[in-house]
Image (cartoon, rainbow, N blue to C red; front, top):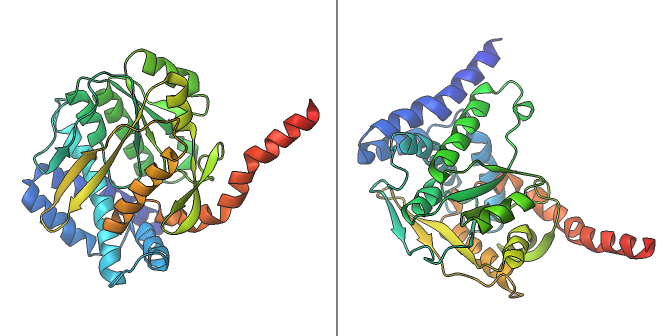
Length: 313
């Protein structure tokens, strides 16, 4: 009972109280508060920090593992705080001064947006709203059964999904079975927002080989397949950091041709560059080891399925 209450308090502290208080502060003070908290090792974000400390040094030079773990916790705190920063800004098209936009979304409409699990927060939806676009986010389902004994985390995810829908002016589209609804959203002029760095465990279909962090990995090609079917470009975005000042730059890249054979690798290269620049901001270090182990089977699966189909005809 005591352990359960301790966990609930730790979750409430990390997912609600600490980031909520930061969102109410002037940002320079909030940044110092979040940095101070990140150096205290306890609670909800320690597992991600330990996984990053374990795996990242095998692929990147990490000079100080303790400081690196604190930076990982800092990015999780920032990402959590972003929800409350957004909730306090009812206008959908406004960014806080410490999130700077670099580049512009296309003006002619009809495009697919490609991002990564690298500290982007909710700002992609606000930048699209500022450009006059509704947005359709494709996401895995947020199922209460996946959070047994973790009501705070489930509540936080539901609130975050609701904020995405408010900013986007469209409901979140959940996998599986999202293809038709995403195509319809594109036809109606909305921008479809997708994240590409999905391991086979979370997105088993359509995995294609890419090189990432010097390793053989895989990305699902559903985003490119959707863009090819609709005849629209893929527009990448990513986040850059000035962690000394607490400033972030939301960068919009140039449109890419989804038919080009190197587009998926070019997108992987963008993530590779972002991770190497700020490795503590990648939220999928806990998945990385299993991701690489699952890659050969995930890539082989479509070929095996095609072989079965041919033999059955």
